[in-house]
Image (cartoon, rainbow over all chains, first blue to last red):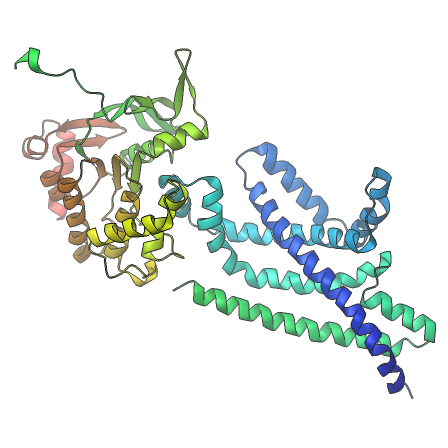
Length: 220
Length: 266
């Protein structure tokens, strides 16, 4: 028989535990990506070329190099500069950074779509740059880009198995260990696939709820 | 004139001192000189492209000026005096002087994600650091003044153009400006909604000691409301004077042409 149910029930609790690490890495990584992305998008809009151009360069650099290399770099090369991070921290940092640059492009589209009149009204009311962004621009820029951000959340989630490359005990790494211990890969790898499928679907449904909620809140 | 009794001429509220504005090769305003006294109501008229809206936008610091100085209550708007020279001002100076000025736009520019009340509370709360309760009471009072006391919790999308523009007026007033700028505030409105907005401006003129500059196409309103009318043409003030004179007996040929064209259209 190709599929061994007994083995399946035996490894399920181990994988369930590992899935917590995967979810943690996703949540932390995306929190970092969403925050950093907004910051990068705002810096890139700066009127000062001294800020905008290096920011754009940084975004292009990160976006144009593979995530796996960045994960290796943070984990293995940062210690050379005296920054030693645990595998989990290094992994979350690299994923957050990588997806932060993608998110920044999404935010940039959202920010760019705000009519000039909103900025002018903010100036005329003497709002500071901080309050203009916090109260006027960002609340209008984010709801339309929630679907795009949601796509990146799912994409980021599905890339967390890359963390197995630096031995973070997330789902994929755990499945590989189980497989090599028992010489059976079918069940652990299949379960990991099913887990990702289920969680991706749940996340997508969650994002739709957020969109609907934001739509109602818009008041229109 | 009994010269000894007259007080020395007061500092103008606003002074444009040979202000020039260019967009590339195009000179929009050519060495403009204009004084506006405190409490004066000036209407700015002229054909499109004559630079009239630019005057307001420069005063609101929405446009940089290329040359000259704008003075607000004797203080340079975008510059500071340092060792007798005028040097470009920092953001802090800009925000302090800008605080004296409020502006109402052609397209309202209300914050669509905030209720009418919140639109009028945002700046007082964040800029003037007014306590929330106080800002809310004041916003409600101003909205009642513009006749929208029953629309406090409405979002801009739930209001008509005239109502939105009245919210925009209340929002600008909430910052207690000394100078109010009205940039073609009725141009985007359906004809039947123009009156309600003009009535609010009339009321403001009568009840508040505001200095007002308005760019308008409503000649009838300009005639009745303004103390002085400036006719702009080709980036310059072509003719100015009290409304009776400018509308009744314009001296300049261009003014005559413009007025007859406008009156023909209405």
